[in-house]
Image (tube, rainbow, N blue to C red):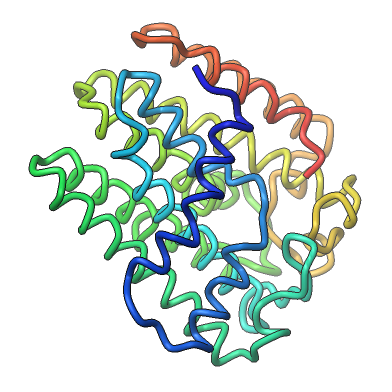
Length: 291
């Protein structure tokens, strides 16, 4: 099994080429799209997709367009999240946010461009594969990024801001705004590797639990983290009345609940074939992250 750094290198080497492969994009639009896409970050979602695919014996080269597409979708969501009408942030991945550099109109279009580019890349790759694995993987990613997935979570996040935080509301936001886009790479990676329904279900359970833990830790970092390490502004959740796990359950229980979600994520791996140590270690590392 490869290391995280090896998967990261594969993703970084491929991203700009995948974007350029789409054809002649207007220069300013390409610049704005690439500004956010090339800003670095953990690349957790594409790395997860490649690792999930390889865990079940799949081909990383086949999975790479889907991994890059998923990072484009994640980046589009960050661009739009940072807009004044949403979270109104000035800093992302340690750099000024897209709308601060290119203006709100071009930031919106850059996000739109990355979302449509992602769909185009996946459909091209699916056609080239010549079977239904790519189609099923693309459907899983777009579903989990869409109106019953990430976007649904964003709606609750935006409309619930300033309201009384409840466990049900926060759980809904965490499951959809964050966990759906961390389940997507596992589901898609397994589908690309030809996994059966039972294996895909276990992968989705792992992704859900990983995603919940990830967002709980994110909520903690907004309270306890450092802006310089996170690459984004801290302390905003409480200031604007965000519905977070910390707001409902407090710091200590959030930390305990995150550890329980990691335990459940690792438990879901036990009945999977292949070498799952990478996914296990990644889940465990979620509790220790500082960015």
